[in-house]
Image (cartoon, rainbow, N blue to C red; front, side, top):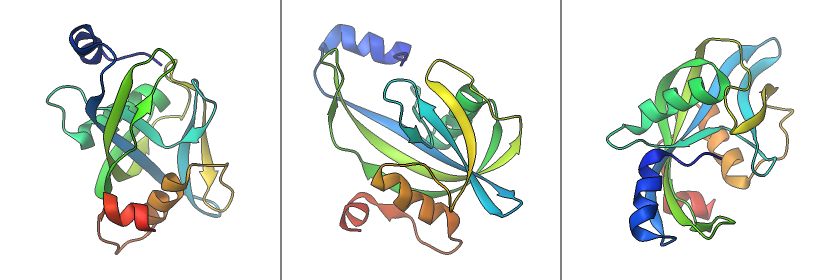
Length: 164
């Protein structure tokens, strides 16, 4: 996975120390012939299916990050409809020793245009999935997708997410 330039600049100063980084997850939905579909990408670093995710650029609002990442990773234009969850993810360590912890802002998004396809080296596949035929996902992605599919749920914050 390519490391954003601003993170590389920080790494020159702090080495592998823990970085606190804001990020966004986009649950891109559209109506399919059998009901709602969600757009997922298969990550090139671990082969797992996920919603579109990314790190905010300096000064970039998380909803703008979601739109930018959707275009970069899956070649689709989206409209961010609403915030569904905010959570502090567990700290992680990458194979090179870099450590990071992300504040994830998850959004329900609507597909506007574009043929979904791999747009950069961060993914090996991009597909629309019926919500009743999803691949294996991490538990938080199932919880957040449930929120994205509902019309009347309040925003879920970190502690509430961990308890569910």
